[in-house]
Image 1 (cartoon, rainbow, N blue to C red):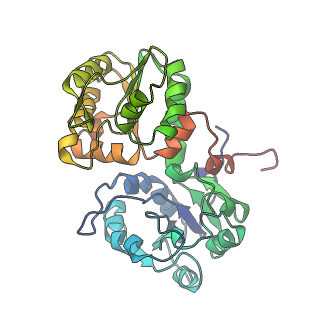
Image 2: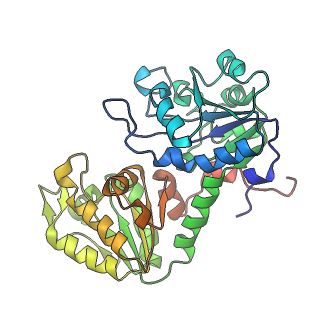
Image 3: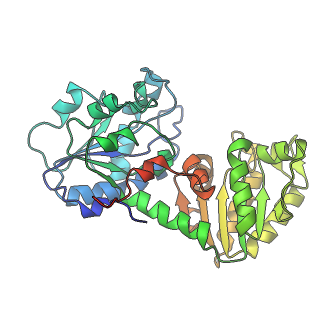
Length: 353
């Protein structure tokens, strides 16, 4: 893919703002439940530090505060976890624009890292306002997008900001695109897709895309119940559960056995969305069973994506048995469903750049 890459820009002495995706689940003690998304940004941050960047600002959203300050979604609570995962000192800044940011990146520094406050505390973010984007990048020389999970959004910190400042794709985004392109265009057969979750409207394009290219599509979760209730018609290679547990909150034992047998013979496996209502532990058997089946198939290239799916893989202790774990949920769905990703399109090389 002909994209502008962070490794091709000289960042020595530069102030760099990096769009990361630290939109992660937090427990009642204000500790992150999954550190995978933080770890995904580490390679780009290390590259910037090693390249001599003077200041590195990490910009992200957390939750849906609807364009106003809501301390429940403040990033201050995760700054210690961010420091621990990155293995570097990270300083929290109580806004993402204005004097607080300018002061934090003023003067001489070598590889200083700051975590900016939630970008969604400002309504200009979701509205993709160029004036807000200009405020975001005003103290900085270079913008790097390493937040694949939000690249399907037309938001200021992903889209409009690229019109204000030289912009590049981070290392993680490049890796995501390479891996997703492989399973989308050149899957080794027999290829199996597993589609779960609750939002059937977002999953239908993905099911329709996979049924054309993959030998089998296994469907679970709430979307399987809705597909059955609505009597949706798919190709013969799209398989719905044959039984359920707990009033449809998890797939049943016969379905687990059937799905695991198919997974065992696959050479390519792509999974997005849990197959049960994992908010309660008793509904996680189906999801954990499929993760174990994927981990056992060492002959297959396996790719799992989506926030809840990643969390479940981490909890299973089998993360190192999966070929690639994507940070993208909606972005992964959009890419594999052949939709444009606005956050990627604006980073593409043009004839005059």
